[in-house]
Amino acid sequence: MFLKIASGNALLDIQEILKKVGLKQNMIVGDLGCGRSGYFTLQSAKMVGKDGTVYAVDILKPALQSVESKARMEKIFNIKTIQANLQNYNGTKIKDKELDVVLLINIVHQLKNSSILFKEANRILKKDGKALIVEWEQTEIPFGPKVEDRISIETVEKIAQENNFKKEKNFKAGNYHYGIIFKKG
View (cartoon, rainbow, N blue to C red):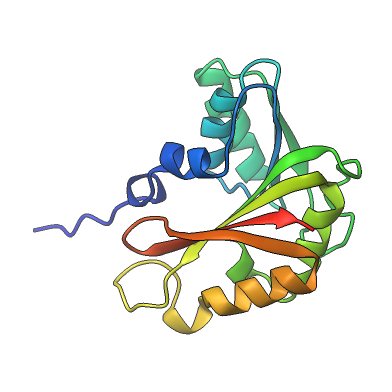
């Protein structure tokens, strides 16, 4: 008997989560730490349409190549990939105040200094732009990062507020994740 572990795509209803942040046609979105799967990147690209743009940002070139390949297979042509270290301010090289929405999906807990990530998100978001954070709940389950490596909702809120973000709402992002939407202050 095999234990089937659900993938990130099965754990989260990506389209529903993106609707909560108000993604729509013609928006410019940044998926910071998009990962090899690019689930949120690809769904965002479909939702913003051909006149919108999604920046897929990751430190690993193979992850970006994987996202590019999946986009080609799905005939999605509005994704721009950027190799960047999210631990560096201005590391994304995205212009100041360019984005409508920044996606930070299961990335905050991975960084040594999450404050730099929020500072970068603030820099690249337009006035009144939004940041969507999805992170693992701090509960013991047989998959995902170790509980001690996860970040609490309170810590995320504190870091965001220190970087000029105002919380709009919290929500349950799945059985094992929480979500928070912040507005640029």
